[in-house]
Amino acid sequence: MRRILVAIIAAALVVLAAVLIIRTNRFHSRQLAVEPIPPLLLDTAAAAERLAGALRFRTISNQDSTQFDAAEFRRFQDYLRTSFPRLHARLGREVTGGFSVLYEWRGSDTTLKPILLMAHQDVVPVEPGTEGRWTEPPFAGRISGGFVWGRGAMDDKGNLMALLEAVERLVGGGAAPRRTIYLAFGHDEELGGTRGAARTAALLAGRHVQLEYVLDEGGAITTGLIAGVTAPVAVVGIAEKGYVSLELTAHATGGHSSMPPAHTAVGMLSAAVARLEANKMPRAIRGATAAMLDYIGPEMPYSRRLALANQWLFGPVIRGSFGATPSGDAMLRTTTAPTIFQAGVKDNVLPSTARAVVNFRLLPGDSVATVLDHARRVVADTQVTVAVLGASATEPSPVSPTSSEDFAVVQRTIRQVAPGTVVTPWLVVGGTDAKHFAGLTSNVYRAGVGVIGPDDLKRVHGIDERVDVKDYARTIAFYVQLIRNSAF
Image (tube, rainbow, N blue to C red):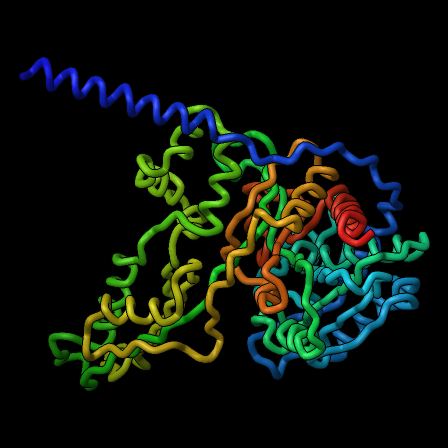
């Protein structure tokens, strides 16, 4: 019997090995074979100077709406008119929400659905007290060491100006698109886009416009960020996470701190927040993250490729390995992040209430309702209320297809202007204005060709935001080629 059992186990292992190898050998590359295009002849220095000029405008989105500087946005838009005269003479232009801008470059074939290319005008504030830590002042708009420095260089005036440079060049060369092209530049993306992009989307919907595809910020060419892939990897967002903040409020008897009750408001609230951190929502490989693994897996060494080709067996190992870093974990689950804790007015007074805010970024497949239900079950304390904070909650976006010709156009264009780059779909863990246009097309993508390495992640919304002049020139070339591939 022992020999029979050993023989059965051995046979099972042989079958298992055969299945693993066959599935791995069928795990083929999804990269498109394309020919690189000739370099775009461009006055890079002049283009960089125009970007530097754009960074000098303090088009800041503050949480306090009373600090909105309308005059600065108007000055910035006047600067765009002066900098790109041919575009403004050729394209239609209208304003939505007071300060967001929609351009229309009308095509000759009205049977073709338009495309919408996006960026945003607003930038986040510079954290008070950090100005002196910048290599170049954040709003000086300086070019130094091969970089354009300043708030908004990466997020998102670099894209906005590159788009305008591309269209100005095409218009100046007498180009006439067959397909209509829209350019949409929101003014409150950093606050959710409800007054800008959302109203632009509503305007187009009211005109019964159906779009072929939307392309916004949210992607880049990454280096050294995806373990196991030595080539540069361009990530193209096919979905973005949702957003909700929950307010936790603990109620208890106040009074003198010399006679505390068994459980104080601060203690109960601290325990509730600790339970949420200890009991996060589960990891899952699905949607955009599953698509990403399908695209990068074939580009990895054999051992990693074998695991990714056989997730039915190695799923737990993959989730553990991929989720070992904060950035990887964010792609696998709805994240839990306590951000505010408030209680007390004096060191010897027991507060009767304590308040905390916990921010969640929702994985597609989860919802605001499921997060709220999860939080209430985990807190499980009748003296701690849990409620959605404010009206800024958004559901996760739909997942756009990678099988569409529109995704292929984006992929092809990236590989034309950045030869040797691996292109993969991914999940945008932040938020963009693109989500507001999901009702006008199922093809909503987020891409870019600026290079981001491990040291660059902290520059977005942080200190020393900058863009490489060579990357900026390639971004202009990317938009020129994308428009040619899509609309001519």
